[in-house]
Image (cartoon, rainbow, N blue to C red; front, top):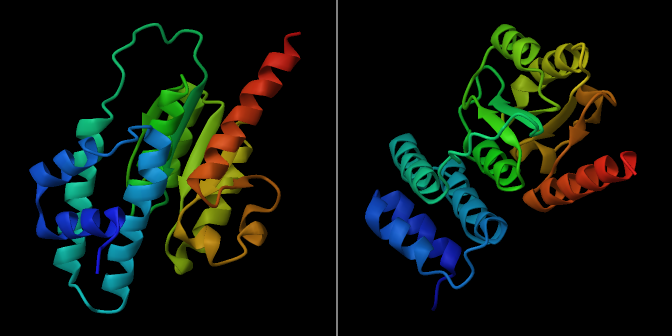
Length: 217
């Protein structure tokens, strides 16, 4: 029985095969970043997550796969060296304290950068005090948060409330695996925007850009 491209990629991640995983991605007929994230990276990592939850692979296997996926993402989509950032919109992305699953928010950061935003990506487990300090200094228009663990939902509420109260009133985007399994609205409390998948990210970005254009007409 033929396996899907996403399953093939998941196997390469689990084998720890950096070179072959990178080669496999580069051989795909559509190199659009959103398509690769939606059709390959995300389902591959979800498969790996399911295997771990069902005790079919170990924590070490899951960590190895995550490391290979991170390597491939970093090699394929390197941060732009464009220095003309003075008039760019700004967005920062982070995982809540205690959250180690950072690949999804890394992909979202990459999509924002591809759309012309200046971004800062803080990765896993950033304490709220440091997120607030960075946001106060840098004044991003958007702050993206990732939550994947149920017992961090009260933590999410604190992050959203504190970051939404910043003087420059950034838009707060909330993503992560829990968005498709739970109603996060009580923890966001109309102060943030729940993003359930990458397609919603792209839709939100397009609408945001259109609103900005119309505002200057």
